[in-house]
Length: 140
Image (cartoon, rainbow, N blue to C red; front, side, top):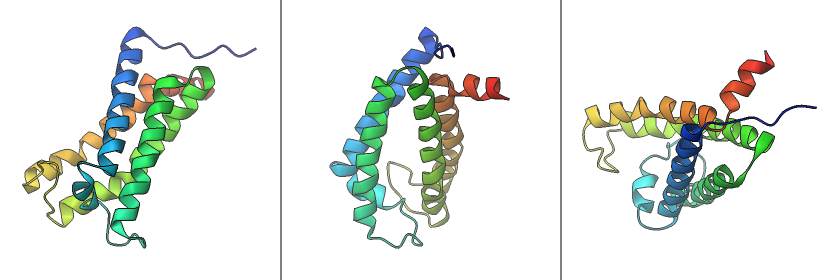
């Protein structure tokens, strides 16, 4: 029988912070920073920008809650899913940078460029804090 993935206290704290961040960010999509999030929706997305922001906000809330509540192998799957989500929204960060759009206090190209380097940190944190990184390495 396969053993449940073990995570350390530090991983659990990181996962809790990341899950809380996701829930708050998702709520922001629906309310207080809705317009700022619209700046990140690339022009090639064939939907209304507000619709994309609202839908992605709901997804972020669900992902955040799942990150906080899931256990065992489901937690590992959640980490992989969240990392994929972060990769999927990365073009929005690139769009904000290449179109020189100010949002979230990112009002210079230097700040927007710096934001691009934060996305891999989020991906890595999602994989590490859920035990997915270890599970994927073990699978090989």
